[in-house]
Image 1 (cartoon, one colour):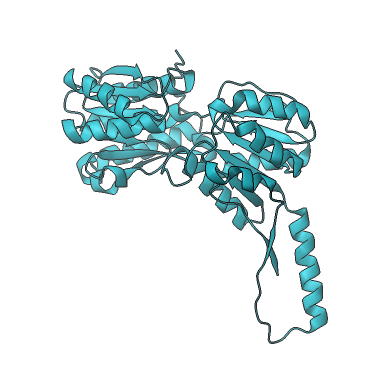
Image 2 (cartoon, helix red, strand yellow):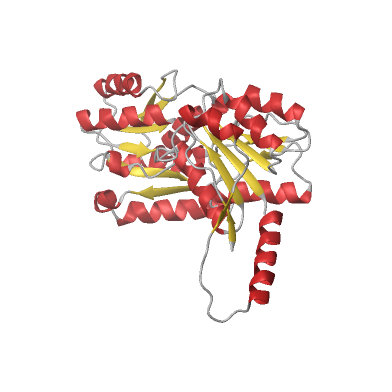
Length: 351
């Protein structure tokens, strides 16, 4: 039996080596006590054909596949697709200055779909896509910037943030909520505003203080901003970006507040303060991209999959469920169902 060897955890120090390597095949050997040599050969031939016909997707990550957040969400979706027969290759911790070379190498290896999982990869994606018009690319812009062979995929986290607001209204003592963004872009701004809208459904006097850190990964700077918000009374935060989220988790620990995990379960990073997690289940998103690639309907797609498609989810941390209470937990679930059914439209406030 043959299975595709999947590149994992490309680090910058290994990048030049990994880019020069052809895709390898790893033979997995096992014993058979009933099949003949002819049967084995036929099986191996069929499996080889299946492998050759399998969709091929490459994921290019800006950070670590174990970050419990943005990059891990994409990585785990790739793993689940791999279990279903998709051949998945992954490069992680790729600096924007180097990403064009990585994208070009995957394109030369004729991957069907190359996903550049960072807003910062925009220029490289469109540059390389022009060079390889037969290869499909996708990038995490969230702004609807597409081309004939480039898709953009939205991050409608604001829908989940609305549900987080229901939790915030119950746990916050002051009613003053905080939002920290890597940058004040529409995707991020809408999260804070949606959380406030959700909270105000329960607690009309709730207010929001938001700030843009100016960096996706600077935890220290984000913590300082969150502590400044705490001085004004903020005691419940939501973050947009890994650095802003880690910063508000650390600030919550010092100030006695509550934090929200960003597109992954970050409870272990602050079990005493991470009351809820906004989860990004990217498998349906990637599967839709692969389906459109196979069907020839990929051109100029702007993917916007959220709660109705099971892509955006919210989980109240088990340690906080008693404190949140059954009534609020029920309200979160019912509100999620209303959003999924189209009975409730969460306000999108991009700026």
